[in-house]
Amino acid sequence: MSDAYRPYTLVAELTYRCPLRCVYCSNPLDYARHTDGLDTADWLRVFREAEELGVVQLHLTGGEPLLRDDLEALIEGARALDLYTNLITSGIPLGRERLARFRSLGLDNVQVSVQDVAASSSDRIAGSRAFERKLEVARWVKELGFPLTLNVVLHRENLDHVEQIVALAETLSADRLELANTQYVGWALTNRRALLPTAAELDRARRASAAAHARLRG
Image (cartoon, rainbow, N blue to C red; front, top):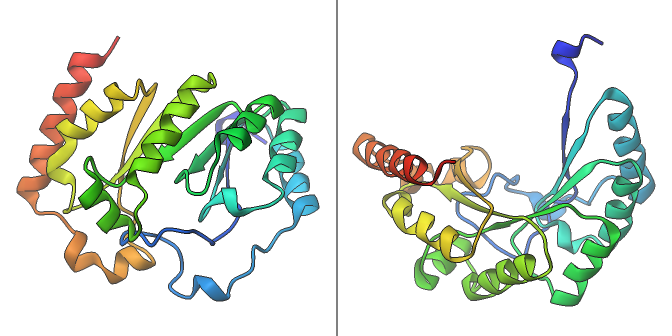
């Protein structure tokens, strides 16, 4: 395989299951009838084959990967392959003890999603009271020595809050802030009329993002 086309990252969607009901979710509309698909051995085989192809980064996501009982085994297997492993999570449900166990097994990075900068709007977008717990999990991530990535999916409901989102990331001492585009498939496609921003909203968000980047870079 040519080095120009060699993959370096694997995004492993471990499950469609999730305790939240985000209006922008890209899960299939009928996700409840889907099983988790691959079992532990199959996923470990996929990781091994990916590493043989040159993959060096592994992102464990869902749905909510915390709902997999074998997540510890998957992290341990990825560590044995020397894959840089990132957990992409809502933080629900997660206790500090389990997070510390992930650390001891070799997990490299934790990415926590939040839906907005205030509990009322964030919980409404997520369809569940989760915002305060997410902040608690983010603080645990830093206390346990992980790098913290904060992820916010942008759409009409939060696009005018970019400056406040950046401030929240700074308050949490996040190492990286990911301002993500909504993927208009699944539930996001169904809810697109409520989510699609105007051109003016996009322009304001771009300017706010650029200003923060200029201030914080380096």
